[in-house]
Image (cartoon, rainbow, N blue to C red; front, side):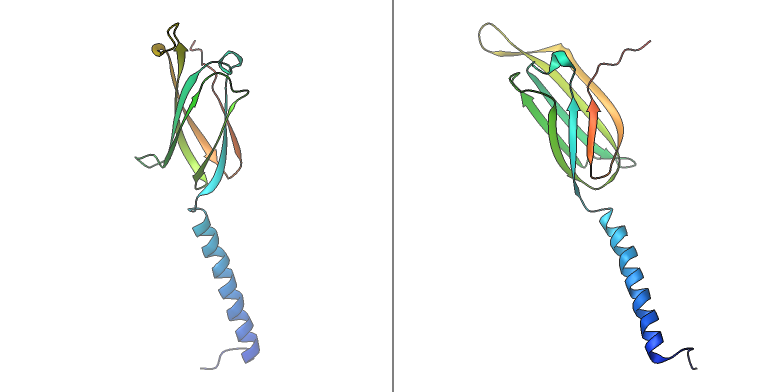
Length: 141
């Protein structure tokens, strides 16, 4: 059986299909590779100068176990919001955030009060850029 075209033309077509397959395969693989994801936890104004502990876990939508997590402790002298970086593949995630205010007692010992604990669950899309998570308390009506 004789294929159409010259031998040089068939080589070019084969090379084109090889390059196209390489591009498609690399895009499919790169979506599962971890990327630097910048997160900004936007605190309320009164919480920016308050000692607190924050923990967050990242679970990909459809999975049962978190892929990553982070923990931050602030003593109240920091300025601004919490900036953190995690390495995760791009995609949709359920982020569970828990934070608690830590009061310094008169004796210099940290005491944790349960009434200052707050948690939030957010569905977010990570795309390799910067993600802002608002830490405002929600008011249920």
